[in-house]
Length: 103
Image 1 (cartoon, rainbow, N blue to C red):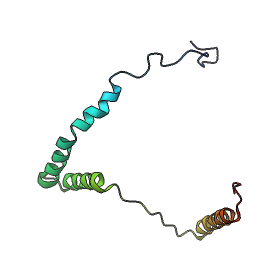
Image 2 (cartoon, one colour):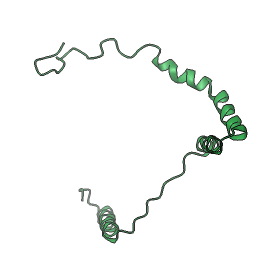
Image 3 (cartoon, rainbow, N blue to C red):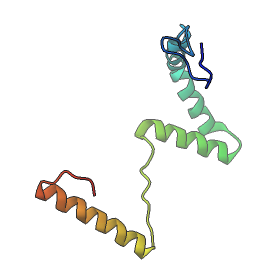
C-alpha cells in the first residue's frame, strides 16, 4: 500500500512475495554447464572460420583462467597529474601525522 506521494507505507513492501524461489537455482544451473561452456569456447577458438570469433573465444578463456588484465590509465595532462600528486601528498602527510580528517 502506498501513500499519496507514492511511497510505501510502513509495514508494506513493494515485493511482498519476496524473491522467486527458483532464483537461487539459476546460478547453480549456470555453473552446471561450465564444463560444456569451456569446451565450446575451446572448440570455437580452434575451429571457427572467423578470426574474430577465434580471438574472442581465446580471450574469454584467458579471462576466465587468469582474470582480466588490469588497465593502466596514463595522462599527459600535467595539471591533472599535479593535482593527483598533491592529493596523494596530503593523504600521506595526514596518515603519517596521525590526523584522520578528510582532505
